[in-house]
Image (cartoon, rainbow, N blue to C red; front, side, top):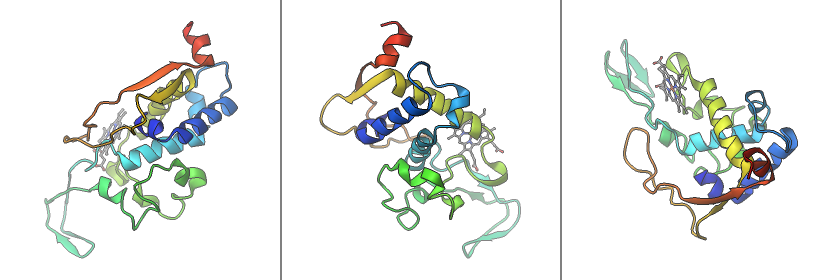
Length: 189
Ligand code: HEM
C-alpha cells in the first residue's frame, strides 16, 4: 500500500485492471488472481525492493565448493543478500524506482530469471511461494477495489527500513481512505 500511495498512477492502473478483468460487481476471487498480470507485477516489484527476508535463510555448504572464485569450506554458513541483488543497478534498469511495468509480459524475467529471489531459489526455495502470492493478491485486491486511497499529506510515505530479520518500516503507514462504489455496495455503507 505504501508503494501504491507513493505512486498513484500505479494504483490507478491497478484499479483499471480490476474494473476490466474482475468487473464492478464482485470482489476478486482466488481464480481471478492469476489472470491479473498488473497485480502480479505490483507484488513482484514490491518483493524486489522490499523482500520480506532480505538475507533469505542461512544455508550451509554440504561440501567444499566455489562461488565466483571464492572457495567455500564444507559446513560454512552461506548467506545470500537478496536485498542487494534485487537493487543492483548492474542487473536492473532504474533499480531503485518502483516500476511494476518492468515485469509486464515477462520483460525482466525472460533473460535473467535468477535476479529476483524473494522466495529463494532452487531446491530449498520457499514451498509456500504460490500460496503466498495468492494470499497477497487476495489481500491487496479488495483494498484496491473497495477503497479510494490518499496520503495524509503531500509528503511521500517514508519508506525507511528498520532493523530486524524481516525489515519492518520505521514509520508505520498512515493513510486516508473512503469507500469506492463497489466498496459501498459490498460493505453496506
Ligand atoms: C510473502 C510470503 C513469504 C515469503 C517472502 C517467503 C520467503 C521465504 C524464503 C526467502 C525462504 C528461504 C529460501 C532460501 O533460503 O533459499 C523460505 C523458506 C520456507 N518457506 Fe517461505 N515465504 C513466504 C511464505 C510462506 C508460506 C505461506 C509458507 C507455508 C505455507 C512458507 C513455508 C516455507 C518453508 C517450509 C520454508 C523452508 C524450505 C526449506 O528449507 O526447504 N513460506 N520462505
